[in-house]
Length: 174
Image (cartoon, rainbow, N blue to C red; front, top):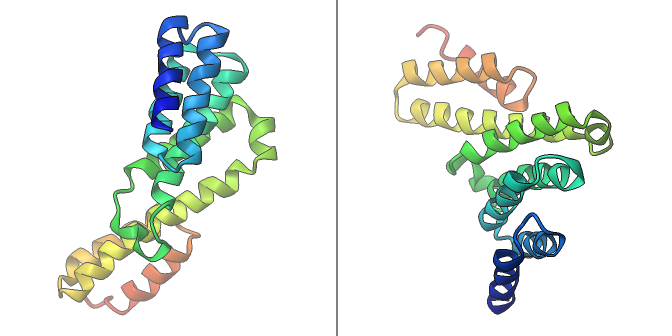
């Protein structure tokens, strides 16, 4: 696979991403990275493509692929360990998905982008809930309450917000 990637990158370099051949080579590289769960490399390749192609089908494909790569890079971790990882990619994925929705509302509806954004919000809320729970465990109730409140205020309607409300209610005297 590494040799194939090198060949395709040379084709892209020689033909240019703005040529049909260079574009096909670049998208093949990006898709290969995605298929191999190398989401950060795939993201960078799609980003490179998006810089050259700002309109048309390839721009739409690149925007959606960048969102998916950022989300998949977070989701590749085991479910129970995800809150321990950096959520910056989730925020970026959410931004790309919302941008996709604003630019391509019909496609966004077909792809149910709203439910993906809702899932990302839940993941972001779970991360902050884990921080609150940590502070609670170590006895820093004031910091825990701040995080519980943040979860409730920023991600109302999530399961994490419900859990934060319950935990915060137990700390109401502080």
